[in-house]
Length: 82
Image 1 (cartoon, helix red, strand yellow):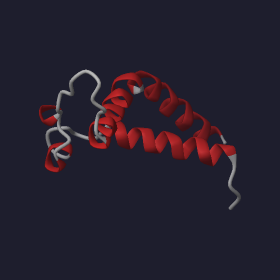
Image 2 (cartoon, rainbow, N blue to C red):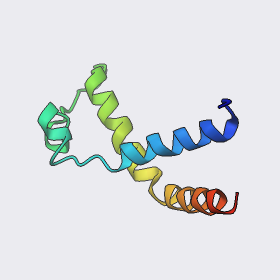
Image 3 (tube, one colour):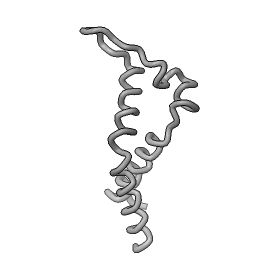
Image 4 (spheres, rainbow, N blue to C red):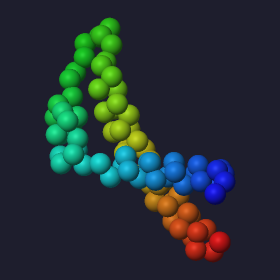
């Protein structure tokens, strides 16, 4: 099977879906990445890699929720048609 832009698009949607369904209470808190475990850094202090990854996950969950619903529906319709 050839690697196409459609495959890349589907892989990206699947990855974003996986990030959006991560539960902070059940999964992320086991690794110390829950919202209760975030450390507040002072002015001028560089945030750790762990807090940057948590912020990225939280931002994706916040911003991508509605567009993902639309992209998932579009992908399903196109898969059924084609």
